[in-house]
Length: 111
Image 1: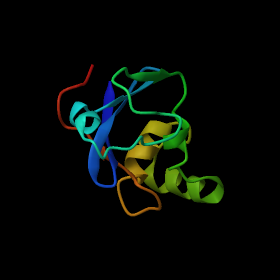
Image 2: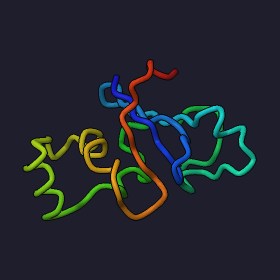
Image 3: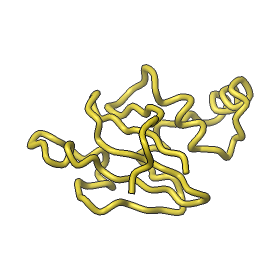
């Protein structure tokens, strides 16, 4: 299982993981407890129950490049063009538009 940390305006909001062909997003318990926390997306409202999907959630797909920019990234990073999770980890951890940042999770896997 691969897991990444999801930050919303530099605050740890939750964890996105991929296990086989299944994606899972779960909000961090401290993020949920904070009174000023906001959902990372309208399609992923705040809740304790994890979200699960066979496809990468649109909130994260929107962070990925398309067209010739994507082609250039997969070629230079040597990532399969269908590996959205790998491309997300490689490209969504730096400066970009929007409140979401993705960072590699070195902690133990989340449930």
